[in-house]
Length: 279
Ligand code: PDD
Image 1 (cartoon, rainbow, N blue to C red):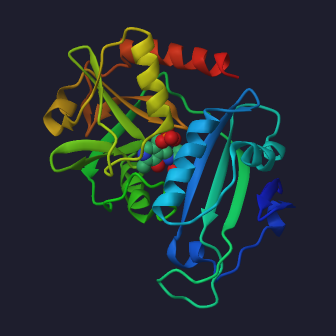
Image 2 (cartoon, rainbow, N blue to C red):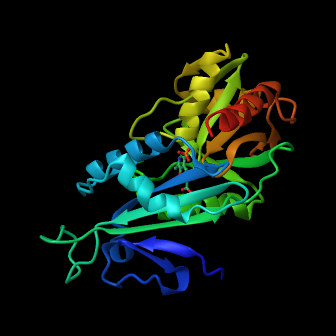
């Protein structure tokens, strides 16, 4: 294991020395939230948007951590390393309580952990395979909670079938991927489901919505019925670590003509230009 420097509760330590108590509520209950922030050309991508979502998650779980953008930058900047694309993983749990009790402890210092890792290279150009699965997660998917057991089981089912992702269906509509947002192209219109408690408000998703609007790509933010997803000419999955992934088969059937689509190619170019422009 690479002994890189990580941040834990005010200290920079070798990874091998960073230790958290077994009474930490993150360990016992998954009582915490997190962010994944890409780093391109040495700069944190869409930092303000990620910190806004971090604060929304903290507020939603009633965990006050009052650090401003400058203070977060001071914590995260020293972790960045030279080289290809990286990402910061930032996790905040409710901290260590004396006893295991579901209810919040009266006094508890949040545990703050951050580390920087390389983004694994991904061959997007040839497209990926996906399956659909029943979205059996909880009703607060807008919170970026560390409690990810359902997402893990769903992603693993996809991997077991040699697929990159599971696209989740709830009440006959596509919600998102196990760890990504979903877009489809239907009659040349790019469509993504609206933000709600059924999906995570993805930062990559937001960038794509803005790029579509600025560049004359027809876009609608609306629910995608299962049947429409299956007749889409393109399907994409988006996230901070995978960017924009074109899906070429869904449940073993070709998406469109089974090739990476032209609207994905245009958006891929716009996204790569945008990454360079903001760094
Ligand atoms: N996950 N939906 C879910 C359930 C996710 O876990 C993610 C990202 C997204 C995409 O959000 P963004 O574009 O802000 O990365 C949507 C991260 C990468 C993870 O858990 O590792």
